[in-house]
Amino acid sequence: MFSDRLSSPPGGDVVVPVSALNRAIGAMLERSFPLAWISGEVSNFTRAASGHWYFSIKDAQAQIRCVMFRGRAQYAEFTPREGDRIEVRALVTMYEPRGELQLNVEAVRRTGQGRLYEAFLRLKAQLEAEGLFDEARKRELPTHPRAIGVITSMQAAALRDVLTTLCRRAPHVPVIVYPAPVQGAGSAEKLTAMLETANARNEVDVIVLCRGGGSIEDLWSFNDEALARAIAASGIPVVSGVGHETDFTIADFAADVRAPTPTGAAELVSPQRVLLLRELDQRHATLARGFGRLMERRAQQLDWLARRLVSPAERLAQQRSHLRQLAIRLASAGSRSTAQARASFNVVQMRWQRTRPDAAAQRVQVEALERRLDAAFSRGRERAVARVSELSARLEVLSPQRTLERGYAALLDAQSGAAVRAPTALKPGKRLTVHLAQGSADVALADVQPRLSEGF
Image (cartoon, rainbow, N blue to C red; front, side):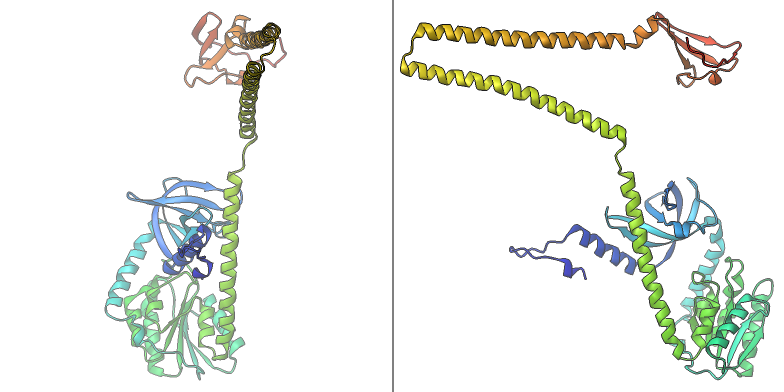
């Protein structure tokens, strides 16, 4: 795709447009770096008018820019503040218009939730080193199961979702529920015992281990080592459908197949014809995510362009600068006219020398021209002096000192140095600096009686 946008000039060197290069880098980053949790301290947090969040996360050695778009930011459980330590689940992307690396944040959480996650990572690394998660030992799911087993709580909403999905997609397949608590003390042991019971009875072709979403504490029963070993040792293929798509447990890695949700697990164990429908849903989701990211990039570009809008004050300053340049060009044009007149005079003088005209008459004419030129320079100089005098007088009239001499005074806050403009800023005991025509003084207010402005 990147090579299609390259052009080769006659010299043979490949020329790469900047936009094509940034687009290729962005695509490579999104392919190379999957979604991951990154921790750091919040810096330069800004909430744009569009609802998007822009901030940086940093540690002692480095920092990186982040953007969290409104569609995800509105579901965040808290708003990060400057200096907060957080963890973000993000995708590494490239903001193409400026060629800047950034994290596209999908979720954010406080760093305090990381202790259980560290324990989760330690157990995952231990079992992975033992080969418990090897893809080679995992089995394919049966295309047409004769019976489906479900291990979950009888009160779980996930059970209703699974049974509804199975009834809709495969009503001819019997379903056997093996009840076990999915949360609380002893739930992991009961889940393990029920999985062993299902294997001992051997009355189903596939087992769905599921529960609804929740926090990492709610899902901790599915991070139990004994349960993971029982799943790996199961003689019946096991599909894990725990939590939402973004939730991962040890049971997910030990199972033969991991489903994003309990409903997704029910779809996986249904007859083979539903795989085509699921693939269609996945393609639709991929297209929607791609379109969403395109819209998000355009929204981010719109925010960036909005910040580049020139303020009226800056536009006036630019116009003043342009007027000054025009004045300089006008003055330069006047000096060029004088130089051209002198050049013309020299040409006339050369012609006079060749043609030997009447010297006396030409001298009189030259003297008249010189007098006119001197008079023109004198008038111009006088106008310039008059203009300078006028501007000096206007500057004198507008001088702050002259304002003070007319009887006015300037009140400044003794601590901040800010000008006092309203009676409400005057409080008994407040210290002020009073600037007068002949000096200044520090005063303290004994009493203040504010009055409505009535003029002088």
